[in-house]
Amino acid sequence: MTEQADLQRQPFQEGSLQQRREVLLGTTMEALAEADLATLRLVLNNQHPADLAELLRVLDEEDQQTVLQLIAEPLAARALAESDTPTMLIYFSIAAGLLHVASP
Image (cartoon, rainbow, N blue to C red):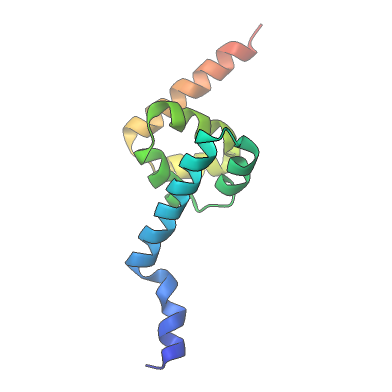
């Protein structure tokens, strides 16, 4: 294989996926700590649903709630489809709380 072909395949290797998720986690934690929700919304809404599902899995419940509220609904639905059951339950409790607050 040529060196160029090897370089083109690198983004799909396991190490690069893990690195991308670590950068996403670091960026998310930094934005949450600084309460930079506008930047965080932009970053989150440009991620793959599987990466968001992994991010949600490692965040604490309070940060999960913040993140879920910043993600566009269609993207959040796709991310939750790839999530584990506890993360889904947290999302549904958030959604129920928002519905309760919004109702007269």
